[in-house]
Amino acid sequence: MAVTMPPEWAPQDWLWIGFPHDAEEWPGVLARAQEQIAGFANAVADSGQDVRLLVRSAANEARARELVNAAVTLERRDYGDIWLRDTGPLVVLGEQGRMARRFGFNGWGGKYLMPGDQTIGAELARDAGLPIETSDWVLEGGAVDGDGTGLALTTEQCLLNSNRNPHLSRDEIAERLASDLGFTRVVWLGDGLINDHTDGHVDNLARFVAPGRVALPEATGPDDPNAAIYEDAARRIEQAGLELVRIPSPGLITSGGGRIEPASYANFAVTSQLVVVPTFGSIHDAAGVQAIAALFTDRTTIGLPGDAVLAGGGGFHCASQQMPSATSPGSSAV
Image 1 (cartoon, rainbow, N blue to C red):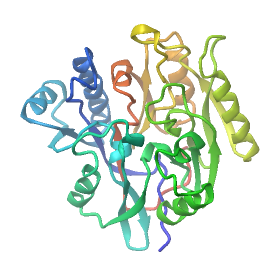
Image 2: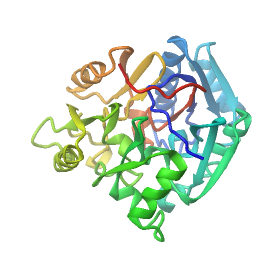
Image 3: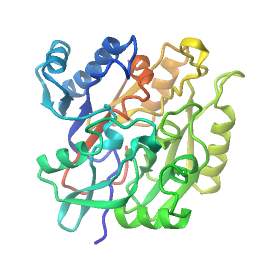
Image 4: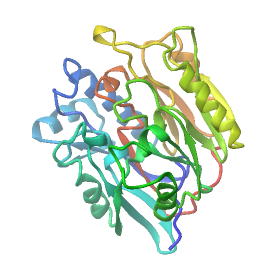
């Protein structure tokens, strides 16, 4: 049966968000990461969209309740990391309506596997009343980005990585993306950002903002560590015949010991009324938010601090997963 994965700008019924709970994942910054995720949840709820914030335990729930407003629904769940983009259900539309696709999950190539991460997607789908179909290969939601017309972006670094599906060729992976998610054409980018824990998820590099239109960061200074990666991606996007729109990069963002962090404004989350862009205390934050706002003129775009969330390995897009409405996936962001 043919299916379509709606683009993120299509109507949504609600947004799942994961709430941080493990101090080992956010050493020294757990409280701030919780505050930043709560700020994200509050902003989406204040825009009028249903938000379902996953919490891990009674103590974690109490902490969340201190930080979120009454419009945010708390759901006690057994999950590991907060990155629901990768562990949550991918919802597609078919002739019979919505259904959830579940894939194998191996902790981003065997690096970070926590109890609950392999089961939370099916649990959320089941409780939402969705039929579930399970595929026998490894895929994380942040590894692909679609425009609703059958086009998908991904990176060779992730989907062709030997730590995911070493038995599958590029063509076989493309065939599975078509049959499982409705992606009939795949545009392969090269590497993702330096030090991205996910082996280069595309949602931290390049994002569709309308059918055939891709937003990609541009280096903002001579010390930008991802300049060559951006330019390689730009060349591939243009060779594929897609419209390329450049947005600023945050530039060089480092943490303790001078480690380069994979900071990106491209990790924005699109909701029904709002676009939320992570900021990092960079001099380019305002320009990054403004550039993305210009791409979504039918929504309000805001920037929220996301540096503490990034310390745990991701951003607002990574920590969330939308439930598309049971309607047409739509065809335009504006």
